Image (cartoon, rainbow, N blue to C red; front, side, top):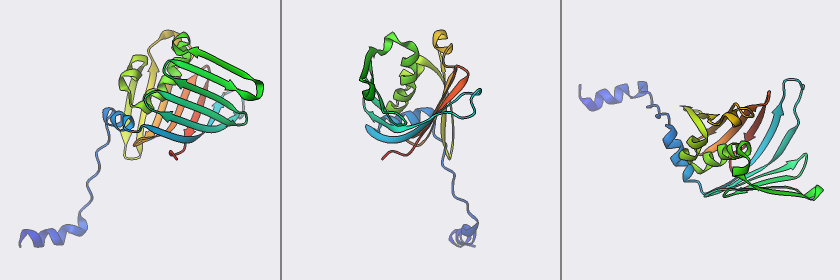
Length: 188
């Protein structure tokens, strides 16, 4: 029997090759290639003592190399924007605007860097602030970020970032006896 005939007879029984699961370095490289995105998010703080958390909704905007905006549109209008090493908080309905250097607030800095470093594909920045654990499957990837700073560990025990290819899907911040869960829709 010729090789061609044998291949044709066996073709119906062939299974497609499984795609290799991505490595942390591949995911970071792919994320670094996305220069701008805007996604919708929902967020909920889950505290064991309370039966339900207060959900928030809004948009998450990223622009390389380091601009990140989290605009909560419901139930309140609130804007947190980061560019370079500065964070600005605005609550227009109350006339509140606050600005500070991230390095003055280490706890806030590591929270910002978890999202910004991931969106930027900046593995070196993540490793400066965290021990980075990574796993992947055909359905997506998962990073577990454990703060290196003991001071920060007092407030944040770990951050779990999940995604699929170049899209972030979730950011769970565990600390202070509760979990803040952010779910992110695909970029628009």
